[in-house]
Image 1 (cartoon, rainbow over the protein chains, first blue to last red):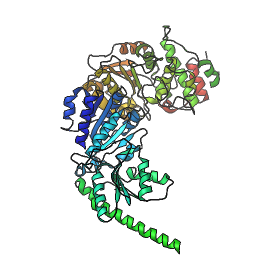
Image 2 (cartoon, each protein chain N blue to C red; image 1 turned 60 degrees about the vertical axis):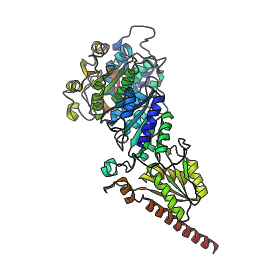
Image 3 (cartoon, one colour; image 1 turned 180 degrees about the vertical axis):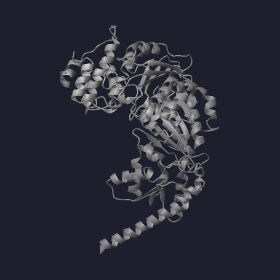
Image 4 (cartoon, rainbow over the protein chains, first blue to last red; image 1 turned 120 degrees about the vertical axis):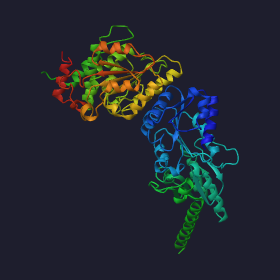
Length: 321
Length: 295
């Protein structure tokens, strides 16, 4: 995703002389091409994220489209108030980009686990929040935030994720993409777990469950219609995110479900508990440790559907008695 | 001392414009500074709010900036080539609102609605719906980084406008200011001027007691700024410093304005109490009297 982002950004900057990149002394090698091709529009602000974000706001309020870039929590939490006051309050055209969403920097420890970013960014007034699911979506999301006027947050995974979309995608900010069709259940995924979601769908199919997969690459504005359609058409909704279950995709979907007047759906959030991971390991390892492996997610969904079926048949028999 | 009700005083003062730049009439800056204090006093008293001391200490600085230094146009507040002024010490915004109203950015009647339900003017500097406020502040340590971005943009675009930021001394505790203090000289932002209202008192004590800034000028010099120290209530010194910018070629300028918190009202001067205290009736009458309102 990181490479797709930079490919897209270089291409955008080629066409639009108003695009600037401000980094917080991170992005070794990957920022080099942008810096070489657009030296006057590249700025390394040093290890100083508050100033980096304030400077970006000042540049944006002078008419520029500014991307800030760093890893994990640094461009978000360290300078959260600058994002709130300087960027969002002033509707400054700043795009905050964080590489390393979730456990992408797993082995580096909890300081580098970006696991509450979606929650805090989603809460900010006027902030568009995107977490693309594969390199193709990351490329398209970069284009989308560049053309969208106003504050945006773009959560990227790491480098080298597989391409989930095998065909060109119709990408639109705020419009979810159905990756797998299915009528028995819906698995809504955001960010880098999209590949897992697709594999889960395949595994469920071998058990006779046709599970729809929806890539919710934009968390705000949220594609409520896609969520309500999932309820209507499949009756069971599961969310999958490499993020705390508080405030991210699961919460966003729950809010829509709770306020919708349709018939109740089976609903379950899959994500991280509100605790720091004290385990050491790679992204794959940590995902598995937190129930986010293909096997765990497949098991969670299929047992929830089973329980629901038993429950439903009990209700049915008690009603008929 | 004769007590004057605030309504009477207000009605006497509120529509009295004391200068007009457009008419090229001479401006009495002492009168303007006094007017800033008087109206600020009324606004804060009516609102039962705070920060009189912080507003009074920068009255002369604002008076000079908005009459002799800043290239701004009340008829075109968004003018691309305007000088940018950010009041980073947003808690002292009442004084800024007064000078903006004096310059005609918005009606004087708005001052009456400061802090009030449905009014235009919030208790910290707010840009939304308020012409002339360049940037909203209130949380300290935000003005200087944003100013750096604006100054850098002006440089990149070859524009001649300048950027001014007024900081409090207490706010220099914020690390974000020192990040920006590193940034500006590194990028040779000689179109940027920081003015520090060094009244030596912050929220809970003197600067010396809370978190000493000294040697203050040396810190800025060490970071690469051209530093000028002035008496922040001396109109000539203020104007001279702000007319000879940058103070050194290729460097941003830091003007350390030595001021007195609560300046202009004897019992408020240099008193921690008047960072937060709102005057009672008697104090209000005494303050008005000292500022010449009862004459």
